[in-house]
Image (cartoon, rainbow, N blue to C red):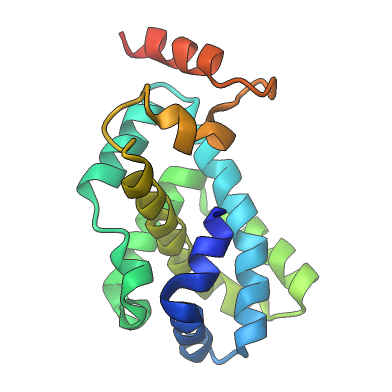
Length: 177
Protein backbone atom coordinates (compact mmCIF):
# COMPACT_ATOMS: atom_id res chain seq x y z
CA UNK A 1 0.00 0.00 0.00
CA UNK A 2 1.36 3.44 -0.89
CA UNK A 3 1.91 6.23 1.61
CA UNK A 4 -0.98 8.16 0.07
CA UNK A 5 -3.33 5.17 0.24
CA UNK A 6 -2.42 4.61 3.89
CA UNK A 7 -3.36 8.23 4.63
CA UNK A 8 -6.56 8.28 2.58
CA UNK A 9 -7.77 4.98 4.02
CA UNK A 10 -6.85 5.65 7.66
CA UNK A 11 -9.86 4.89 9.89
CA UNK A 12 -11.96 4.15 6.84
CA UNK A 13 -11.34 7.68 5.57
CA UNK A 14 -12.34 9.37 8.83
CA UNK A 15 -8.94 11.02 9.31
CA UNK A 16 -9.13 12.82 5.96
CA UNK A 17 -12.79 13.68 6.65
CA UNK A 18 -11.67 15.30 9.91
CA UNK A 19 -8.97 17.17 7.99
CA UNK A 20 -11.64 18.45 5.60
CA UNK A 21 -13.85 19.63 8.46
CA UNK A 22 -10.98 21.37 10.23
CA UNK A 23 -10.14 23.44 7.16
CA UNK A 24 -13.68 23.93 5.86
CA UNK A 25 -13.25 22.04 2.61
CA UNK A 26 -15.05 19.04 1.14
CA UNK A 27 -13.73 15.52 1.59
CA UNK A 28 -12.85 15.42 -2.11
CA UNK A 29 -10.91 18.69 -1.80
CA UNK A 30 -9.00 17.36 1.21
CA UNK A 31 -8.14 14.21 -0.76
CA UNK A 32 -7.02 16.33 -3.72
CA UNK A 33 -4.78 18.36 -1.40
CA UNK A 34 -3.25 15.19 0.01
CA UNK A 35 -2.65 13.89 -3.52
CA UNK A 36 -0.63 17.04 -4.17
CA UNK A 37 1.16 17.19 -0.81
CA UNK A 38 2.27 13.58 -0.42
CA UNK A 39 4.54 13.41 -3.50
CA UNK A 40 6.19 16.73 -2.56
CA UNK A 41 6.66 15.64 1.06
CA UNK A 42 7.93 12.25 -0.07
CA UNK A 43 10.47 13.95 -2.35
CA UNK A 44 11.67 16.04 0.60
CA UNK A 45 12.03 12.94 2.78
CA UNK A 46 13.93 11.23 -0.01
CA UNK A 47 16.37 14.15 -0.28
CA UNK A 48 16.89 14.11 3.49
CA UNK A 49 17.51 10.37 3.59
CA UNK A 50 20.44 10.89 1.23
CA UNK A 51 21.98 13.67 3.35
CA UNK A 52 24.55 12.97 6.03
CA UNK A 53 22.87 11.12 8.91
CA UNK A 54 19.56 11.41 7.04
CA UNK A 55 18.67 7.74 7.13
CA UNK A 56 19.53 7.36 10.80
CA UNK A 57 17.58 10.53 11.61
CA UNK A 58 14.50 9.26 9.77
CA UNK A 59 14.71 5.84 11.39
CA UNK A 60 15.17 7.49 14.79
CA UNK A 61 12.15 9.74 14.26
CA UNK A 62 10.04 6.78 13.20
CA UNK A 63 11.22 4.71 16.14
CA UNK A 64 10.83 7.41 18.78
CA UNK A 65 7.90 9.44 17.49
CA UNK A 66 4.26 8.68 18.00
CA UNK A 67 3.42 9.68 14.43
CA UNK A 68 1.01 6.84 13.80
CA UNK A 69 -1.45 8.58 16.14
CA UNK A 70 -2.03 11.18 13.43
CA UNK A 71 -3.69 8.50 11.36
CA UNK A 72 -5.15 6.37 14.14
CA UNK A 73 -6.95 9.19 15.94
CA UNK A 74 -8.91 11.52 13.62
CA UNK A 75 -9.26 14.00 16.51
CA UNK A 76 -5.48 14.52 16.47
CA UNK A 77 -6.05 16.61 13.33
CA UNK A 78 -7.72 19.22 15.57
CA UNK A 79 -4.90 19.49 18.09
CA UNK A 80 -2.64 22.53 17.98
CA UNK A 81 0.28 20.25 18.87
CA UNK A 82 -0.26 18.53 15.51
CA UNK A 83 0.45 21.80 13.72
CA UNK A 84 3.52 22.40 15.89
CA UNK A 85 4.82 18.90 15.18
CA UNK A 86 3.98 19.30 11.50
CA UNK A 87 5.89 22.55 11.24
CA UNK A 88 8.92 20.87 12.80
CA UNK A 89 8.60 18.02 10.30
CA UNK A 90 8.36 20.50 7.43
CA UNK A 91 11.48 22.23 8.72
CA UNK A 92 13.36 18.94 8.51
CA UNK A 93 11.86 17.87 5.20
CA UNK A 94 12.06 21.16 3.31
CA UNK A 95 14.48 23.23 5.38
CA UNK A 96 12.76 26.47 4.36
CA UNK A 97 9.38 28.09 4.69
CA UNK A 98 9.77 29.19 1.08
CA UNK A 99 9.67 25.58 -0.07
CA UNK A 100 6.52 24.98 1.98
CA UNK A 101 4.93 28.08 0.44
CA UNK A 102 5.85 26.85 -3.03
CA UNK A 103 4.33 23.43 -2.33
CA UNK A 104 1.12 25.07 -1.11
CA UNK A 105 1.08 27.40 -4.12
CA UNK A 106 1.52 24.54 -6.57
CA UNK A 107 -1.22 22.58 -4.80
CA UNK A 108 -3.50 25.63 -5.03
CA UNK A 109 -2.94 25.85 -8.78
CA UNK A 110 -3.74 22.17 -9.26
CA UNK A 111 -6.68 21.86 -6.85
CA UNK A 112 -8.29 25.30 -7.05
CA UNK A 113 -8.17 25.57 -3.25
CA UNK A 114 -7.09 28.76 -1.54
CA UNK A 115 -3.35 29.00 -0.95
CA UNK A 116 -3.92 30.25 2.59
CA UNK A 117 -5.93 27.16 3.49
CA UNK A 118 -3.32 24.88 1.94
CA UNK A 119 -0.50 26.60 3.85
CA UNK A 120 -2.37 25.82 7.07
CA UNK A 121 -3.14 22.28 5.95
CA UNK A 122 0.42 21.38 4.94
CA UNK A 123 1.82 20.88 8.47
CA UNK A 124 -1.04 18.50 9.28
CA UNK A 125 -0.35 16.66 6.02
CA UNK A 126 3.30 16.34 7.07
CA UNK A 127 2.28 14.62 10.30
CA UNK A 128 0.06 12.27 8.33
CA UNK A 129 2.95 11.40 6.01
CA UNK A 130 5.11 10.56 9.03
CA UNK A 131 2.21 8.51 10.41
CA UNK A 132 2.05 6.61 7.15
CA UNK A 133 5.80 6.02 7.18
CA UNK A 134 5.56 4.86 10.80
CA UNK A 135 2.79 2.40 9.95
CA UNK A 136 4.81 0.98 7.07
CA UNK A 137 7.90 0.77 9.26
CA UNK A 138 5.94 -1.16 11.89
CA UNK A 139 4.64 -3.60 9.28
CA UNK A 140 8.05 -4.07 7.73
CA UNK A 141 10.07 -3.92 10.94
CA UNK A 142 12.64 -1.51 9.50
CA UNK A 143 12.52 1.53 11.78
CA UNK A 144 15.67 0.60 13.69
CA UNK A 145 17.68 -1.23 11.04
CA UNK A 146 19.02 0.41 7.90
CA UNK A 147 19.67 -2.94 6.22
CA UNK A 148 16.10 -4.14 6.60
CA UNK A 149 14.85 -0.70 5.58
CA UNK A 150 15.57 -1.56 1.96
CA UNK A 151 12.22 -3.30 1.55
CA UNK A 152 10.03 -0.62 3.06
CA UNK A 153 12.07 2.38 2.00
CA UNK A 154 13.14 1.24 -1.43
CA UNK A 155 11.31 4.01 -3.24
CA UNK A 156 12.91 6.56 -0.92
CA UNK A 157 16.40 5.10 -0.99
CA UNK A 158 16.97 4.41 -4.68
CA UNK A 159 19.00 7.60 -5.18
CA UNK A 160 20.28 6.76 -8.62
CA UNK A 161 17.01 5.28 -9.90
CA UNK A 162 18.63 2.02 -10.95
CA UNK A 163 15.97 -0.13 -9.29
CA UNK A 164 18.36 -1.38 -6.64
CA UNK A 165 18.73 0.22 -3.23
CA UNK A 166 21.64 -1.90 -2.06
CA UNK A 167 24.27 0.34 -3.66
CA UNK A 168 22.55 3.39 -2.19
CA UNK A 169 22.33 1.83 1.28
CA UNK A 170 25.99 0.87 1.05
CA UNK A 171 26.92 4.46 0.20
CA UNK A 172 24.83 5.77 3.11
CA UNK A 173 26.32 3.20 5.47
CA UNK A 174 29.82 4.32 4.47
CA UNK A 175 28.85 7.88 5.40
CA UNK A 176 27.50 6.73 8.78
CA UNK A 177 30.66 4.86 9.67
